[in-house]
Structure formats: structure tokens, C-alpha cells
Length: 366
Image 1 (tube, rainbow, N blue to C red):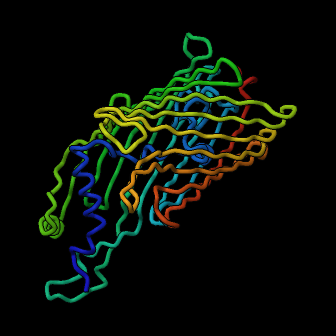
Image 2 (cartoon, rainbow, N blue to C red):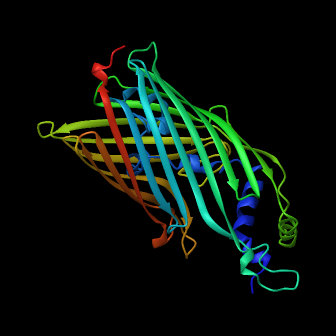
Image 3 (cartoon, rainbow, N blue to C red):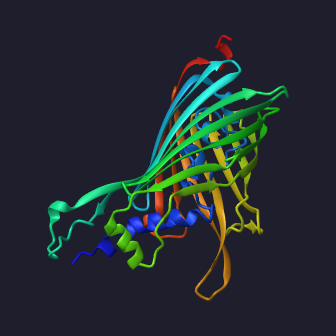
């Protein structure tokens, strides 16, 4: 026998988390931190220092200026939690001037076809499947970016503006906005440093709720507070990175790597280093490149402490693997990773496609 209490479990979890975020900003708009591009994710997301082109609009907008072709178009799809959730990305970037590159990235992270059974049982206690409905819970972001050089030689700056829309069926929705600022310095082709200040002025989302009487009753029956319209805030975080690369065997091969450190400002977290206000989360990545056509990648991230069955404290990490192939103007990338410490259902395959076309940068007319 179905019950309103059991069938609204997913919705209650989502709304309760949103309500809690009014007071705890740690995981507000967390889908924005998942990243785009299988090349970057195969490196453990350690890319802030040398990312370039289209995907730089998400990781570090200063890297847009290192786009090699006039235009780039990219797509990505990933299935998370054993196919329960889907992450999709689509973007375009274009050099409009020798010193200006614009980018536009669209992201969707959602769970589709969630059953809503609030009307499944009528007043006489009979089940009426004709009243069974479904809804979606999804997060959307539109990120517009610009990259330009500074007056300091080899130092580029970038700015990203984010517009956010989130909804849980017809029960709750939110609109938000925020800004990222990035810097990238490359004095040679062998090393680079980067900085990205994410949510530089904090990212805000305004939530509003439309709960039916049945859902309000379910909240009260399960000892949950009724969510109130309010503002959800995502506090600033800073990502620092340094990268290097080394040509091998007559320049046919190239090996490179990068180390990043993400510093959050929302209090204690389960990271390698954590204080009352700041927490530091390191990540690292390596790659091997053959003639700029074939790529192998690996990385580590999410260093976290956990207790085993014997109550011993241990350190865990999340591994990443990736590969890529470049065919003239097309680049296909793949990444394989695991979310958290879960079982087989938490392994995730990610694919991304990028098309680069138009005049090379060296021939773009000012």
C-alpha cells in the first residue's frame, strides 16, 4: 500500500536540504563545482593554471585567451549514481578580437521522472493509478565569460557571470546569480600559474515554495519544518594552481602535471586541512601527450578522513582516469571516476566532445 509519507521521500529530502542551506552555505549550488570537460575531470579537476578555450569559462575565465582557434563548441554528458542523475553541458566560445575571447556555457544537473503520488489514493482509500504523475528536479546555470590580457606581460584576466535557475517540480524554485574572477600567468610554454576566485561576491539564490496542503501535512507528520522563502548563499572560494610540462623523445611526447589547492571560506570541512573558517582541499593531475593527438590522464582529489569498522581514522582519496583523441578539428575526451566511497553504482563514465574551427589565433585580424 502506497502512502503519501513514503512516496514524498525524495521531495522531502530535497526541500529539507534547501531549508537547511539557509543556515549552512557549505553545499549551496554544489552542482556548479562538478566541472565540465572530460579532459579536466580525468585530471582530477587540477586545471586552473593551464586550462584554455571554451572550458576555461567554467574553470578559470582567464584561460579563454589561450584559445587556439577562432571558435570552439563543446558538449558533455555524464550519468551519476547508477543512472539516477544526469549532468549535461553545452557551450561556445569565440575570439572576437586578438585581445578578447567570449564564452557561454550552459549546465544542467537533474533527476527526471520522479513519481508524485500525492493524489494516488483517493478519500475512500482506493488506489487510482490514473492520478499517478511524475516531475523533474533540476539545476541550471548559464555562465557568460570574457578573457582579456592585462598591462602585465603574460598575465591574463577573466570574468564569469553566472545566472542560476533551480526547481523541484512545481514545489520549489530558485533564481540566483554570482561572479567568478580568474588570473593566469604563462611566462613560457613549459609552466604556468593560475588563480580563480569563485563566487567572488558570494553567489545568491532566492528560493520560493509552493507546497500543497498534502505536502505541508507530510512535513509536519515527519517532524520537518516547513520551508520558508529565503536566500541561499554560496560563499567565496579560491583555487590556486601551478602546472608544468616537459617534452620527451624529439618532442613527439609531452608529459605534464598540475597541483591545485582549493581554499573554502565556509567553516570546517572534511578535507586534508581544515580550520574554523578556512579549509584546504588539494588535487593533482598528470598527463602524457603523443604528438598532440593522443592523451592519457590521471589525477587524485577529495582527500578525506573516515573511520573504519575498528574506529581507526584513515585517509581516503578519489582517483581519476582519462583518455582523449584529437582528429583534426575534433577532440573526444573520456574520464572514468568514482563518487565518494560507494560501490559499483558510483562509478561514472564521462564523455565530452569539442569542435575547434575558424582562423588560428596567429592569423586572426585585429
